[in-house]
Image (tube, rainbow, N blue to C red; front, top):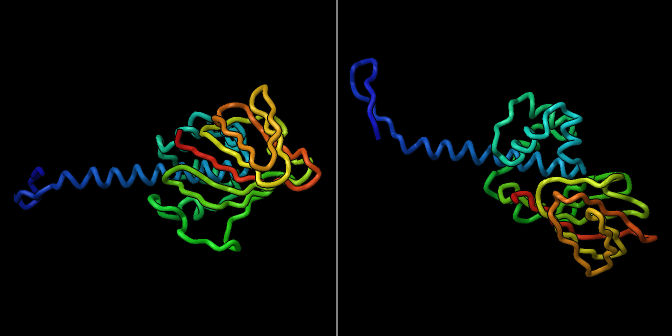
Length: 209
């Protein structure tokens, strides 16, 4: 604790230990916003480079924002929200320290059209801890990306039904029910349905790595 002399000459007490708490709250909220931007980008199936191209914001800046290392300007947030087709209220809503909900009905799950023929049902999101669990559905001949893509994080896929081809760098793997693929997301990758029916898989994305 320190003191300062006010206008009336008396000494006012300044509680120094309140500032670390306030600073921590700012840090938590910046990280929370970055995690929500990152989750929204993944939900759209975009790489950082693609988001950069659509917004005019450098890839380096987007990476810093998503990792909570830089507080974005309002203009930057607006540009990102427009490109990701999400509202500002969605980016700022929620509690930085908690999972979005402790209980959700099947009807309340958020459904995202990742691309043509690909639907993502968000099972659970925890922005503070940096992970998303989803049930992804690939319809016949659908691909997550026409080209191999990469982004920050680590991901795990577990096939429930159908057959999924996962390309990681120069290797290709055919996953059938019960099979798992786990890899750093920075490796070039994509997945596509190689079966005649719908392929379903649980997908785990971990961002804080």
